Image: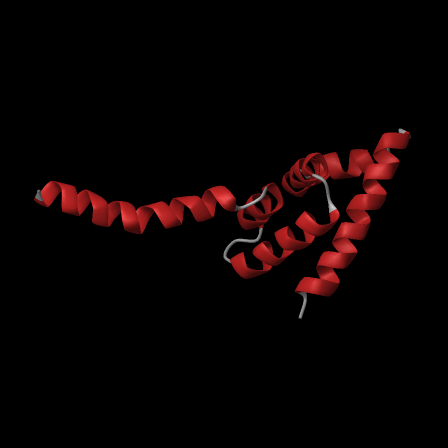
Length: 102
C-alpha cells in the first residue's frame, strides 16, 4: 500500500514536468539549448512561432537555430522555395523580437 501511495505521489509530481517538456515546440527546444537559462523568452518565441510558422517551417527554423552555417546556406540559396521560407523566417524573427523583447 505504501508503495502505491509513493508511486502515485511521484507520478503526480513528475508527470506535469514531463508533459511540459513534451509540450515545448521545436523552436522552444532549440532556443533553450542555445539561450541557456532564458526559458521565458524561449517560451515567448515559441508562441510567436505557433502564430506565424507552420509545423514544417518551425522544424526547419529550429535546425537553423542549431546550425548557423545551414542558415547561411538557405539565405544565399537560389531556390525559390528557400527564398519563400526565408521571407517567412525573417518575418517570424521580426515579430518575435517585437513581441518578446519587452
